[in-house]
Length: 75
Image (cartoon, rainbow, N blue to C red; front, side, top):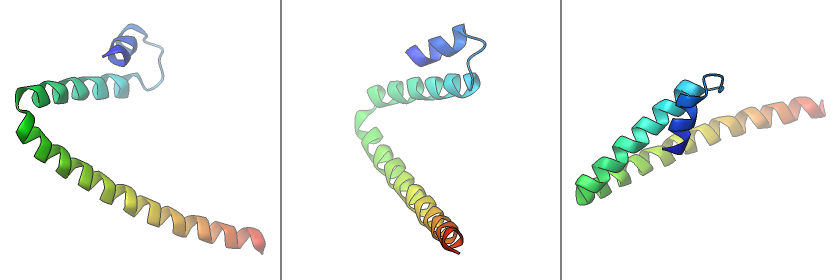
């Protein structure tokens, strides 16, 4: 909430739109969790699982890029 208010009040803030967007989504997610906590647990588990898979794929892809770059440094 504080980041959203800060982003709204400071028009020169870099990434202002993203801060507002994330703040609004976080606020809505908090309201949903308070409204139906048991259904939210299942949803949260799915979201976290998907997040871990996405992060894992990005780490694997970036490790291949780092490996290639390190070979080029040694040559």
